[in-house]
Length: 478
Image (cartoon, rainbow, N blue to C red; front, side, top):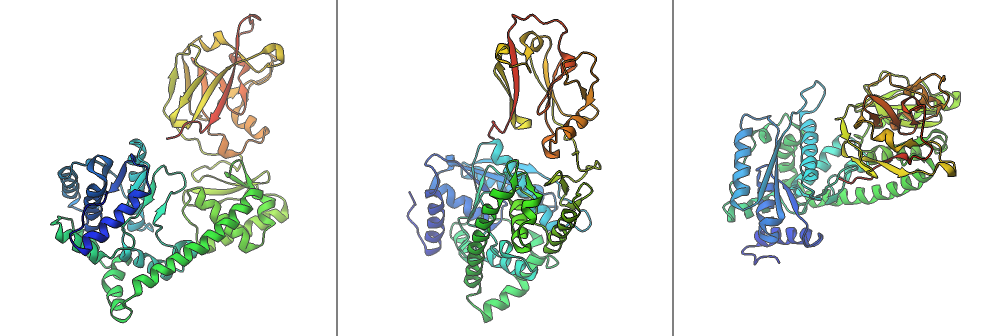
């Protein structure tokens, strides 16, 4: 229930927050990104008044970019505690590498931290304090950068990024900064003024302090006009995305992790580029420039005509676009292997003293080992005696490179490297980063390759129960 508003600004803010709240289940918790600025302070204050403190969670990201960062963290914690709201904070490091925008690096680090804090607390809704002035500045920045429709669509009122667990909601997006400041003044809120907001070396600040004041004089309704531009762009982008989804049905391979080389090149350039942009965006990649994407498509067409794409490598945002065996896919950019191998990601080792469990969930792998009863008499030969699983502690380990196994039942058959076996079976590079199942120090099972016969005993009791091991991805949510 929305509290009785005392002033026009009070009413506008409470109604905006109430509307966003009405879109959620009655018991859903809400995370509010609290920077300490006027917009996020207003949002948290209003959220507590409308939803109640118990449903709110205040999240703060400490960038360490300002000498006042510790004081800001303390202020935000006190602000949340005064309202009876649970508070959490995370410190991040912002890249200072040459050629990397500090603004962009800080934004990316902030959203990663907010997403992590939401996921760890099982909160599926993240409220952000951006307002109409922010939206106008974003559209202007994108126009000046020559952005496409996705860029001009600017900030969506509600958006679930690819791979994220928390939907980002902007309840105040249609309200002006002046209206939020009026609310804050009337409520006697204390907020932080980040000194970097006055530094016009940053593009957004230059627009805010030097461009938009002039626009307000000559074009008083420019904020509404730019908001309409963003809405039109978003509508057009939705149509392009709908077309891309249709094209993905014919070109997608392995649940969207790869594209068919031939299917992609069957489209004209505009349609192929639209599909590639959509594929990258839904895969969680940073958008590539038109020039970079156009060059990638040109190279794909050239190797398509030549019939050989093994050497293709186009680096972008820490990954590399590769073409292999008729598929186009992304692999980790720090891999120096040819296109038939990918970088190996180290994960924490998990252990299990197996006592007949049917499933073993591995959160760090986002998947599950399934131990199913097997029927050898029915021809189920690729199985393991149950006693082998009890022989020693089971462990799930990352690949480190050089591991070998024997897939043949013949005792004198040689062992072979996992890399060679993956290549022989045509397993795409992005699917090779799998957990290796060990019993004690012996490699026992490799997803997509099967049982290591060298780990099994020479003599097997035919009457002994046997188990089939299956690896299933993404059974675990969150």
